[in-house]
Image (cartoon, rainbow, N blue to C red; front, side, top):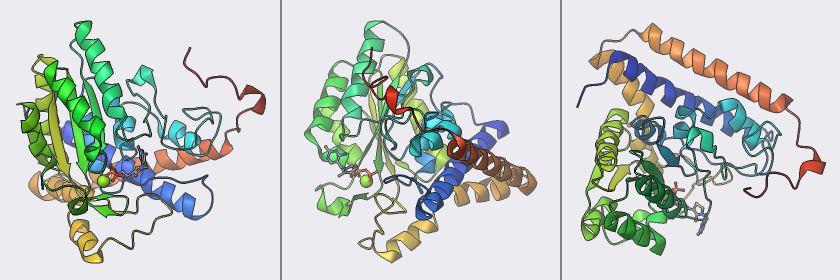
Length: 322
Ligand SMILES: Cc1ncc(C[n+]2csc(CCOP(=O)(O)OP(=O)(O)O)c2C)c(N)n1
Ligand SMILES: [Mg+2]
């Protein structure tokens, strides 16, 4: 497999930094009472969402979860539209129909809106993959699920069918060790979710979810297999949910030592270190990327806050698919 170029590495860095900047600003807005309802942080997940989506071609389709906004940005969903959505504005992705990460899809960008009922994005993405296969289009559907969502019956039914029909399907399991307040050890009797792949006669790969290049390489391989008609792959990205389940949750039930341990493995700090020390990149180039991300996110917040709320008369439009 061809090694990543310097330009590509800087792109990975940019998308992760943009995602983190978005996340930090979102959390602070909500803490200031400027948000509406709840919201989910994806702090710690940046390498998973960015590294995986970077391996796709523009014509591929993703069905993301609530901690995959990085993948959505990479596919062209703008921070302006995302913030506007979170603030319930007319200019948001759902035009104020939903003030959450849910439903924030845009089929023109190959993003199926997040289907809140876990793990419902999995069978929906399989439907997409099957339609691509039936139409003999060399495109791939990729979806995401958590450790918690991996214990639902539908997870198994979907993987079984995807394997049986050799669907062009990639499943990214985000094992961030908690499903709400439940640790993985209280959810399942196995250590590696990827081991379940053997039961469906498909590859199951474990990857360091805080290493963006490792996630990218593993996904690239899975996407290649899927595109060549060799069927699905399960990629289990081991990571850590660094905040509570949602903004209201202080995650007091997570041992502080565990968080401290994962803080040292922060995906962006690690990549910064790698680019500076390993690749001998210029710190100024990385600082410029951070500044660019900050400007973009500030602009998005200003845009969202200045945008109008939807006209109540339009409440019935755009609710059902035509
Ligand atoms: C069928 C269903 N039950 C409950 C919920 C509420 N819920 C949303 S996310 C979540 C926890 C999911 O944990 P996990 O799959 O590990 O993903 P994570 O939040 O850790 O990224 C729960 C219980 C839901 N969305 N759908
Ligand atoms: Mg989880």
